Length: 437
Ligand code: ADP
Ligand code: MG
Image (tube, rainbow, N blue to C red; front, side, top):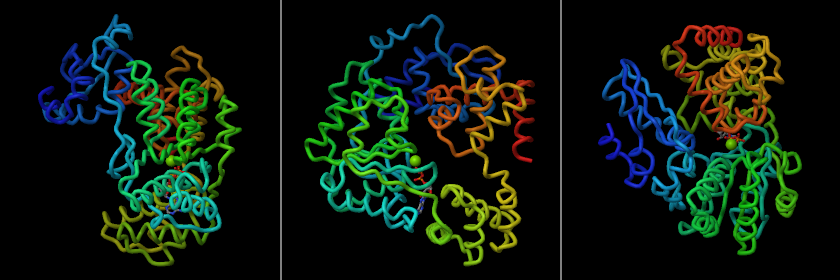
């Protein structure tokens, strides 16, 4: 398997992450690979788990992959044993979706529908992409989940690159920024990472609210921001909270955000929603009538991601059933949404259902209390959030009282791996029934 993986990964990544893995047991239906540290385990889960699983399936489709931290390993060891990973390089051109600091090709200004709810934000974004570094710096795009922050942020990136292909545009999530800083410190490469960021012409950072409480990262961000600002380079950040609402955000970082312009995205009004549905249908070549577009727009109100999701569901259903997309069909499929159930599942609703099912307090689920009585329900809640909402790991961590994204990721994997043990299965099934009926 390692040979196959070596062929698929670049040598540096292979040497850093895959080569040190050791198979500790291979019994019947599971293969256990030992990593050297929690950090390595998380990194592999985040970046290479899919590849490893794909290769594993080729050998045996029955075998499950388990990653563990080798017993008795101490974190310091990896610093000396492993070569340091190369910092990510500024991508020359946008590539396929979202991970690894790359941008989604479809998130451009031409696919962004404007209306009163987002006029100001999109006008500001356009200006910034016309005159990076001099219109509004920094630009702070604020709005609730699913209202187009990431789309608008990447639209700025695409537009700048279109005008000037040589522009060094770096898009990244705050999670990636945090990872870079952690790695930089751990592998003593902070200078290199600083240099990499400071070489940007345009720095686009998504979901900056996740920097809350991460002191070292805030300090790095502050210095990076100042360096770019002084060199008249553009910085744009998005957040689902206003600067003063971000917990533990350093005063001087808040002040920097307030130097520029803060714009917000509101939930779109009906006409804008209709236009968004039509645009999406057009881009994806889904044939829908005005009536259907209107019906969907009336049914799903608060969140553009759900609006798009509804259209996709209807279209998938219609094509599976070989039916035309009609209002009647849309009604049948969206009846859950209209009854306020089903698709409208949120992390909040899941946390509540888990709290009811196990008879534990929501406050306890969100606390840092340990012990199986609370840890298992908490992990199941995180698992279900991942399964049934569009929430990312950092968002799930937030919903469970501000846990780290790795906590959410590990909880998801733990429950997934234990789904065929009877008691975990039973709990998950019962809660799903509660939620989805
Ligand atoms: P956020 O980052 O605020 O959570 P996203 O940018 O990921 O939201 O948007 C969610 C989805 O909705 C994306 O697929 C995006 O393309 C789409 N979307 C949001 N707003 C608009 C809009 N005004 N016009 C077209 N598509 C939109
Ligand atoms: Mg986003």
